Image 1: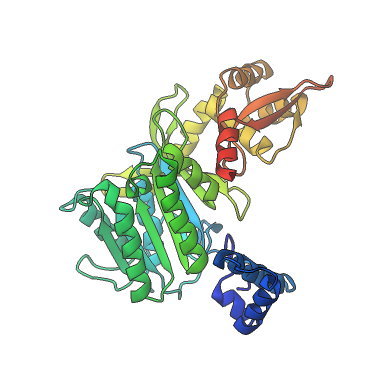
Image 2 (image 1 turned 90 degrees about the vertical axis):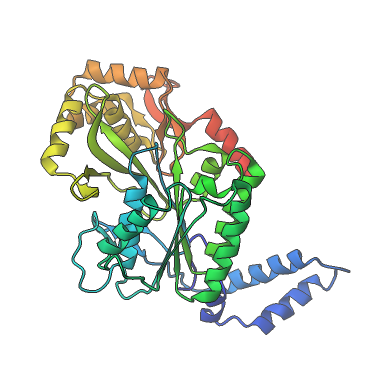
Length: 413
């Protein structure tokens, strides 16, 4: 491709666009000729600017996705992606299906929650980095599960499936070891790398410290821009919150292209059901996809797609009461792109979709506003529901939380 999404200008892009190293070097020398001792960094940004100028002259061909789910484009080349959720909601089991889809062999008919590799002939190397599970049962069983879902046998050792555990490495040493291991992999294979960090916050010394968090963020950014690499980061949410853990979680959300959230669906009384909801909080390269539902199967020791009837029973119960979370999700759909919607229009939409009374829905909107319930816009940013009363006709919109604004300003510094 002429240009990679989320990417700096790679060597491949230079070759494809007919840019010569000699020409770039001459341009750097011309521009910096007036300076006594131009720094290497100045030379680098001038060279990059010249590369970008050449690429800008041509039509940009954006990358195709490498993974789809039920036909929806989910993961693209050269990106950082996230699975987030509370502890115990089967984040790792969802990652197993994604890894299996990336490894799936010809002739294997296993359905993988709708996940399919875009190019079945693509030769990816999947790298699973684990930090939590024990090495005698839990992690080996997960690796077996990935292989068997992909069409391999337990005793097989696919050459394009690598895995390590950082469990026995002291936390403060893990980042250095991970960096060293990834450099080794780049020497051993020319295949595109699909790297899973489970869980990503355990790969650094302190996920609440800016400098430690940025070490891993910077490592991933450099890797996706200089090499054919994709990251899938698993991360816990803060207890009783939908925010990814720590300063690292905040930065990760900013840099991620696709963010998936795994949670148990609630019933009309706000109790957990056995439905597992996979919700797309952020889709940078596409419109945000609708959620899908799974269940844990004791028989298969893994996830299966939920039956439509089971989903309908739970959702009907929630609609009858205009459940707060259901109202919130509809508000995110209507207002997540930055739109302001008239009160009357918003109520009409909600009444049509949820079958609830106007009074009930007004109460829900009031509660969401007063309790500062967190919503998310289409970029995955935390927001609050607000009312614009500057004219006679009241409008609703969502605005970034004060905390989100402060974090973004800090991130932009």
